[in-house]
Length: 471
Image 1 (cartoon, one colour):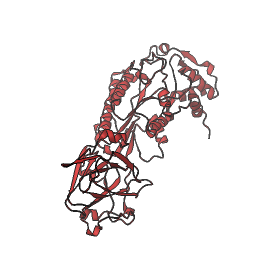
Image 2: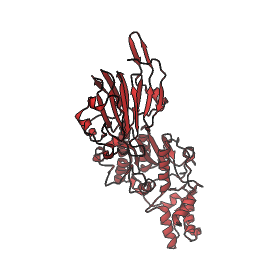
Image 3: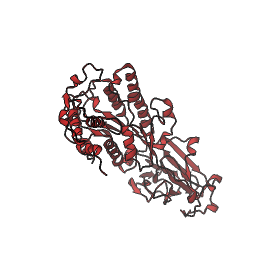
Image 4: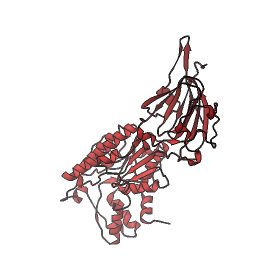
């Protein structure tokens, strides 16, 4: 066998999306040859996904003409040849417009190829004593075989031109029985799991992702954050991301003995479990943070500000942020003053306005509203654009103002006089009441997420649409 020595490391895209062919530098002398078969840093620089292999497999094939496949496995593979030579054939068996697309080439020890999950893999040895090696990023198990997708080597539609006719080749009985392309069930894409899908943000996420069939929505009945079984009943390698829209948000109740226990269980212990799963299975983890992680002493909060929570709720959210921050692929979406479907401040003020009630409203807490639909849109933007991982402030745009000023605008939008709103201090409002401390300044700096191309909608515009919807 003749091997071309000292080729530069190069990567070449193929007709199948995600399938990348590599030329590998092989160094030889009178003793034989040496190559860097897998070099993570150099290959990432060429655009190979950081697919984090966990298992190395070797297939030894004694005779030329040995033919194996076509198997689409539920993990990614990096394939190379240790000795000999093969004819490789790959067929896209993933759902989508490239289903059935074929790529073939010969491989010797100076080449390698990356095959993403769901692309059918097959090869035929062209020399005796061929060793075929592959790295995979999930552990093989008996259960995993049930998640394979197969295609018959002799399928007439893809019409692979095998160098050695299949009638003369060595095949397994199982491979001979695989279905034709018309009968193949395409491999579905990995899913994104949305937790807390029945809450205010969860419902907004349902709407923003309504046309994406790879999203799995779970309320408490389908995934209870405080039940150990929820974390063990799924095959996490079938997922690519978790969006955690579930949280304990009863700010005042969190100060009680029972509320404190539930807040820490939901906002910290459950988040720790999700973080461990995300790290182990290389998932993107999206978690929602709050302005309550700050004491409100700063008039404008950036993502880099140190935690300084005043109450139990803020403490649990800060602890959750710290846990999520160690996940390599994470988005912490920090928001404030959330308005969504169901009971909320804007809706309450609108009802009071219609009833002719002039309420007392706090006038020394300053911030911006955030409508749940815009949080959902921001999350979708971060994921789909592949924005750099990290923490992002996300609220509506516009002028920072007090709750009392927001209430006055609500009154005006529903046709009532907002002048009668009684503005009071936080101290006065909660006098003789059991309440958690609040940050007085909750305005979040939007510069970082704006740099990713996201444009926040003005809160006045969103409130107008919320209270006075148009067809």
